Image (cartoon, rainbow, N blue to C red):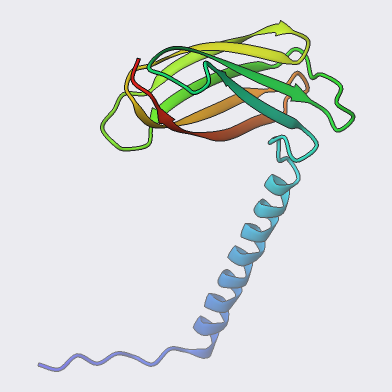
Amino acid sequence: MQLRVAPARESDLRGLMARRWLLALVAAACAAVTGCHNTTAGPAVSVAVSIIPQPPRVGASTVTVKLSDPSAKPLTGARVSVEGDMSHPGMEPVFAKASEAEPGNYVAHLQLTMPGDWVILVQGRLADGRRIDRQVDLKGVLPG
C-alpha cells in the first residue's frame, strides 16, 4: 500500500503565509507594549550594599542597603528584602525584610549559617513602583 499526498494548493500556501505574518505582527506588538512598561529601576537608581561585620563571619550580620537617585538624594518609602544563598546547591537560603532606619538607608539582619561563599540578593519596590534587583557576591565568610 502506498500513500499519496496531494500537492499543496497555492491558496493554502498563501493562507499559511498570511497567518504566519499575522502571528509575527501580534508577537512584535506584544513585545513593544511590554517593553514600554518596564518597571525595573535602571541606572538612575544607586544601590549600595554594605555588610557588617567585616570580614563577614558565620552568625548575625547586618546588611545595609542605601538607595539614592543620580543627585545622591535618598530614595525613601521603598520596600526592600534581602536573601542570602550559599554559592553551592543544597543549602537553605536565609531571608530578612529590611526596614528604613533613616532616609534611603534600609537595614536587614541575616543569620549566615555556614562559612564559605554566599550570594546576597537585594530585591524591592521603590515608592514610585519601580523594582530593584541587585546581587552581591560575599566571598569567604569565616567560621563564627
